[in-house]
Image 1 (cartoon, rainbow, N blue to C red):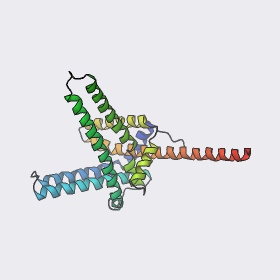
Image 2: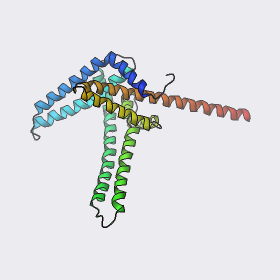
Image 3: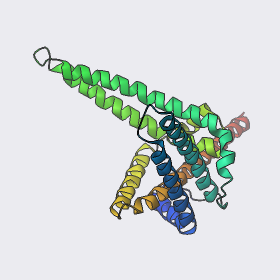
Length: 255
């Protein structure tokens, strides 16, 4: 890639181009998934103790998980110039275990930090003011700090799932790559995600139906962002290698 830059306007423009070509197909596929999910919810009933409810919701969860992987892989394929093929939803299951391990790990981080934040907040709230004004304030500061830390971690590893779908890397390697390519781009990613949020709010305002269009477009935007960051990372690493080789050659020449 030439003249690669992390530009929001470029990402939105590129995603719009892809939507014009494949938007109808992808939105239709997403709506079909929603219809199937709704149907499973209706036939599952409301009795949480019934076998029908348990099996129906379990099937819905597996369907949602598999659809998320397959849909993400379809978007990656479209960005590579390939036509969307439904066979992706079968082939993607070879990455299911790796993808599941990633989700379990991310969920564990969220739960641990959330539990710590809850304990700190509960302690701060219940501490009588007559005992100390400093302890509650410190507790709230810790709570805010943990919240910021969690957001920062989630941004740094936000592309690990795409990396697993896009490559043959394992869970740890995917997390490491996501951590590396997002370094230095945290604020730009925050602004990008806020823009995506605004886009989906506008979709909701467009008679609600528009949100299905904006959700698919949002996935294109975030996937393009991943590809741009990966290209920038490789470009930077190549430059570092060239500089290292030049320095090595200069030292040998000097000697």
